[in-house]
Length: 243
Image 1: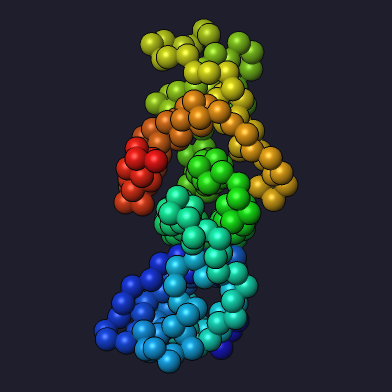
Image 2: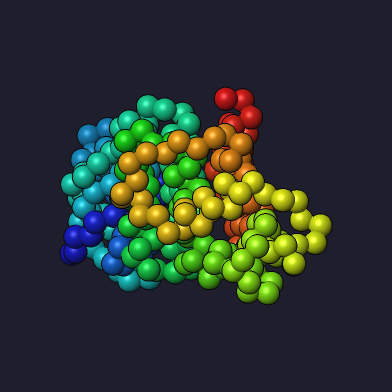
C-alpha cells in the first residue's frame, strides 16, 4: 500500500458498480486504478473518483499494471471551476492534454504545471490564457518546442518579424517568405508564456485579437508537430463559436 498525491484525469465505468480511473502523480507518472464499488450510492469512493479530484490517494500499487484505489483524502475539488461551463471545458481539455503528455514523458513537472494552471483558473484567471501557457510549456516535454529565442531558420536574434508554426517558431525579415506578419504582441507574449512562472501570475489582461493569434499559432503547431487530436479541444473550439 502506498499514498500518492495526484489528480484524476480520466474515469470510465467498469462492470456494474466499479470504475477505472487515471491519476496523474508527480512521482509515479500516470497510474491506472480500479475503484471497486465506486458507483454504489453508499461507497466512500463515489465522491472522490470523479475527474478533477485533486487529493492524496491510498493505493495497492502495481507498476505498469492495474492498481487498486483503496481510499482518498481530497485536497481540492475545484468547485469554482465546476460551476462555469467555460472553465470546466478548459479544465477538461487540460486534463486530457496532461494525460497524453504524461504518456510520453513522466517528468513530475507536467503534474506541477497542471495543478498550478487549474489553481489559477479556479482563482478566476482567464482559462483561455492559462490553457495556452500550459499548451506551450508542454511542448518541451513532447520534444517539439518551437524556437523562440532566435530565427528558426538562420539563428539571427535581430529583426524578428513574425511567427510560423510550419517553419518552427520565430522568423526574421531575411527568412520570411509568404508567411503573414504576426502582431508584435503575439510574438512577445508567446515567449513570455514559455518563461512565466504560473504560480506568480497576478494579472492577465490580454486583448481578444492577441489571444486569438496565440491560440491559432498553438493549434497549428500542435497539428504539425505532435500528432495529438483531443476531442475536448474540438469541443472548446465549438464552444468559443457560440459564447
